[in-house]
Length: 335
Ligand code: AHM
Ligand code: MG
Image 1 (cartoon, rainbow, N blue to C red):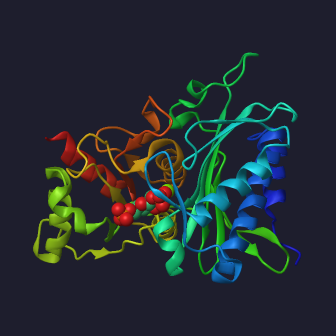
Image 2 (image 1 turned 60 degrees about the vertical axis):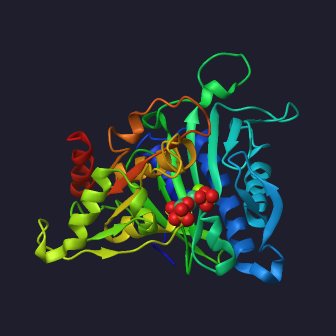
């Protein structure tokens, strides 16, 4: 078809016409997209491919790993380690950083990923996804250390996710807005299906795991309480609720029609700042959401301004339609 813009063409145009991305970053993103295609195929096979169920292992966060968590992690590593575009990788599923082996050429970028987000949905055939973030390696000839990854989210040079749902959709930003690509399974390539994605500033839809309500802090209780009062309360309108339990799918809905997503700190594990991980989940999603005109905070500050202190750091997350995120954040300020 004449007017179809492939993922490759989009990236080449970003490189040549807008000067947004160097050639090495373009190669990196193409390899990530290829890996996502491979993961998508494994997800589609499901029980026929023997990929469902647990893997009898735990990750560094003490969570039981699913077979697909491990498969997706291996696919991303194997696809990315030999191309010469990367110096190292970090994954939600690996204890420490993964250095590109010495037998391969090294590049100037660092890749971080949650290989399979929404693991609890794998076996029940509900949307899941891959989330990724790209940083530049700090200058210098020495080898990469974990500390090199500890950069604030605003320093990302690319971020995206791929949602494996009824369609497989890859959503990307290189700092020039947000573009969506749908996998054409017959052609085997991602095709641009929406450019310049915009999240409406206002919404009537929120996403939060309501079963944790009694553990929340006051500002979150107040915000959700007011939404639940609907037309009769201070908001003067009825709200709708959705919770998929795959951040990638909840964020994709917000990218498509607006909404606010929350996974706040709660009293179940008071020493953890939240459930979601800053480097693999919150930072890439926060940048995508901001690039689409939305907002993302941890209740106190912009997520992209948080200086990380460790690789697997956790964080509270409020993101999506700007006016709602501003509101729930302001309730925290008034504490
Ligand atoms: P995962 O990366 O291990 O899949 O965990 C992250 C997921 C998010 O995708 C989702 O928003 C959240 O955990 C759901 O948590 P809960 O089951 O507590 O509602
Ligand atoms: Mg995850």
